[in-house]
Image (cartoon, rainbow, N blue to C red):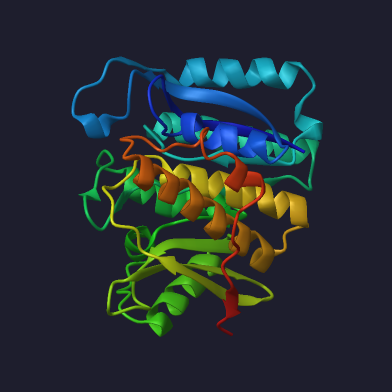
Length: 285
């Protein structure tokens, strides 16, 4: 299995490709990273150094990969944060070329816009870009609950509203939608859930909520592992959902116990391929 991952990158910590690539590799998926930025650390620190690559530079790297004859063998293209409309067009062009070379390849897009705690943290216009251009082109998309509301314009305060919003999103293109950071199922705020929907049904998995600071890159890792598990299982959504919830919980729990400020992805790598416990997936409909 092979994946082309087009995302940001950081030298220190885990975000973008620096969070997504290793989990895919640990699952046995060859992953070819194309970086859209090269920063010293993620921007949540408030100070960082490095460069944002021009769209032409990103396109040039992708062209070089294409020239190696890789595209017919790719199983998927993965993307996350979109820094500009120009980079988005480069990614969509790459997706079109990969699918032309291999019609069975899928596009997995993490529509990074923001989250409930921080609000919208992308540049003006990016949310609309995700809604109008990226999500409709995707086969798989992985918004958090906050992003689902922004993408659909729907209020999500109940499970029924969440499933209705997912149906709206799926009607625009994606076959599989994974909603992360779902909080509407537990008024006590002691657990957190992920809900995945495809043509076979809607499924939920719930894990205890860990008391810890927001850890950058957890969404990037979750999306990459979900894609990797789907590729391994022949797009079996319940199986992928169970394993991914178990893996990301294991990574974050290890990080909490060690008190690390960045995800301990490498130190906790065994739970990526072989989760110590598997949380049960329930069918919602």
